[in-house]
Figure 1 (tube, one colour):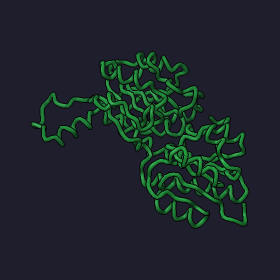
Figure 2 (spheres, helix red, strand yellow; figure 1 turned 90 degrees about the vertical axis):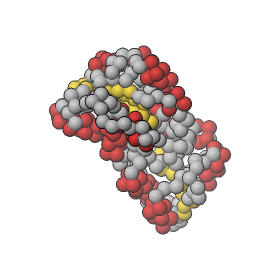
Figure 3 (tube, one colour; figure 1 turned 180 degrees about the vertical axis):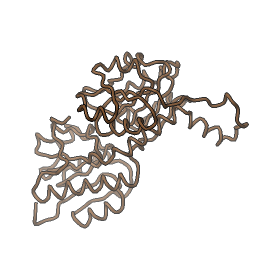
Figure 4 (cartoon, one colour; figure 1 turned 120 degrees about the vertical axis):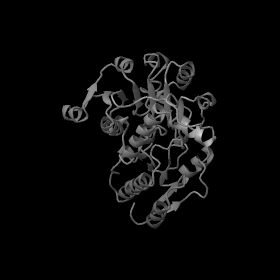
Amino acid sequence: MPGKQLSVVVTRRLPEAVETRMTELFNVTLREGDKPLTRTELAEAMQGADVLVPTITDPIDAALLAQAGDKLKLIANFGAGIDHIDVATARQRGILVSNTPGVVTEDTADMTMALILSVSRRIPEGLALMQAGNWEGWAPTAMLGGRIGGRRLGILGMGRIGQAVARRAKAFGMQIHYHNRKRLRPEIEDELEATYWESLDQMVARIDVLSINCPHTPSTFHLMNARRLKLLKPSAVIVNTSRGEVIDENALTRMLRAGEIAGAGLDVYQRGGEINPRLRELPNCVLLPHMGSATHECRMEMGEKVIINIKTFDDGHRPPDLVVPGML
């Protein structure tokens, strides 16, 4: 749309450098505070903008898209996950959707390993003991956890992040197993020394640590349901840095409470920011506030991708990170 600046609405506060660059390039409406827009505010933003820059905290469904103005032609999502956007309906209405893939890979994989170590070695319990001033000194049987070297890691979802987790886990001496919609190419399997399981049930029954690294789609909702969770060994640990909806959280909570699963490390939750209070009470459950990709570097790179997607669109070309329904 050469000749006039695009009208761009940003739904959350972004890094200052990103906001400044956007202001230089486009006619941008930025957020003053940092609370998510209400549904009404989101609808208003979509009625007046050429481009909307939402985040995972902005559920954009078919009903909301029906209220979008004729101007809205691009939803440039700040984030890789797009399960909060009805992409198919957007495309039907002539609205393109882009995202920011790739830049969250390394940081999310780091956090996955941090959670595996935190749960296996009981790091939060040790921290709480020290902060409460209750430590009475070293003892041979105190705060015993489990060694991760030699353990079998099962990765559910072997995309960019799953492979990055595999590389890290291999360096820690873990044995890599995985289940994926498609088997990896032989050279990647060889590099990762990874064993492919066509049957998720068979893999789950044999591993010591399960890492969830698949996106949330209709086919992955509650993929780890009560029946499948019961296949895990009682000594197993489950870690999720992907999407909370992949696990039946109520079933997981019951099994953790009953000691049927040894521990869990969660960075994402089935109901977004609404955390099951029973999960918070469990000493064998490490909970983080969706901070898997929360590094300065990642947020800047996400912002740069958003700007490139908008600028490319403004120049009359296809955004490089265009999401099409067939990808989902």
